[in-house]
Length: 143
Image: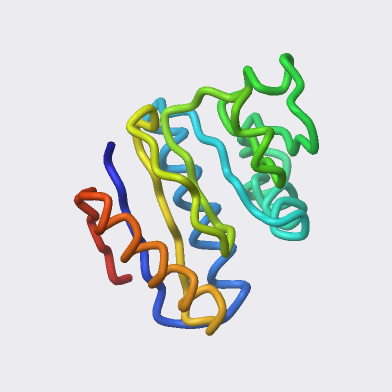
């Protein structure tokens, strides 16, 4: 499994969501499918942001409270419940939660995006250590 941690230098929500949206767009343009796991409010924020430059640049996506077979087929899916992750098979999982996702070799690519907001930073450090202790190699990108 490939694991990337992106560390942003600020705790500004606008910059955080802008970076996440840009990353999702770059993965989509590279032909990758993505699931974003985040709290409900973050999913709603990202759902609105996956429209770029108004009506001209839209990433096909859906925010799912529960797994829907039709929506799960879209290239980008946002979920706020861990149970929903089981029904979705994507190339990349972007985890924006404060929880420690159980690492699995079934995942192809795990991405954690963290800013300097104290709770997110503390949670990401704990998660990083847990992944390291499990023997995973982690790529850290300081932005």
